[in-house]
Length: 240
Ligand code: IPE
Ligand code: IPE
Ligand code: MG
Image (tube, rainbow, N blue to C red; front, side, top):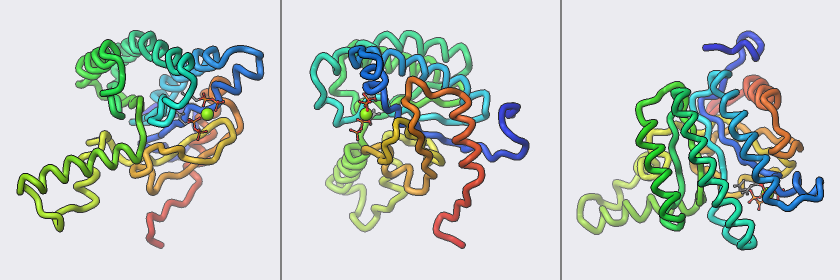
């Protein structure tokens, strides 16, 4: 695996989660409307995805829109949704780079045209294996766990399952991240030190990396810094 950008022996996380935060503040600092920050953040997303692949990261998940972000002013929500539509066309470029694209979250609240684009990108990239890019859109960790519980409750109701059969593994199998490994490293730019409902189940044993840099200013070298710091951490998973 090409890791020329990292010191010899760096342990690269298999799955990195990125909370793309600080777009609004980036725009505000420049006296621009918040949507310009989102546009700039989308550029960073493309750059960082390509760099993640160069570093040998196998899965990268981006928190793009949370189940709580609907609370924002309608014009900002509309601008973000428009950006998704536009960028989904561009995400197709990743397919040419052998990158698999997947989406997590509740799609039912998204526009039908967007849902269709999401399904077709997923289908067209399903056999690619150089890296998996996961986009969390209308995603909430609590909503995801509730979704899994509903699926299992149905199975109990149908007599396929006993309540005592419900294990963490079974809950996990019914999350949106089915077949995606747990998160090893969560990166949150913009100075906030919280998860904001991002992958609360999957990051149970993740390492956290926080930086004050705003997402639109985040560079490949910042990703390298996060990976190097991760590599130096001592993960114990409850053991000694
Ligand atoms: C993150 O940037 C993008 C989304 C939540 C869609 P913000 O829009 O939260 O930026 P700040 O936190 O207001 O600066
Ligand atoms: C988290 O950022 C959601 C995304 C990055 C999509 P927020 O900006 O919504 O989180 P809070 O409100 O600061 O916790
Ligand atoms: Mg924010």
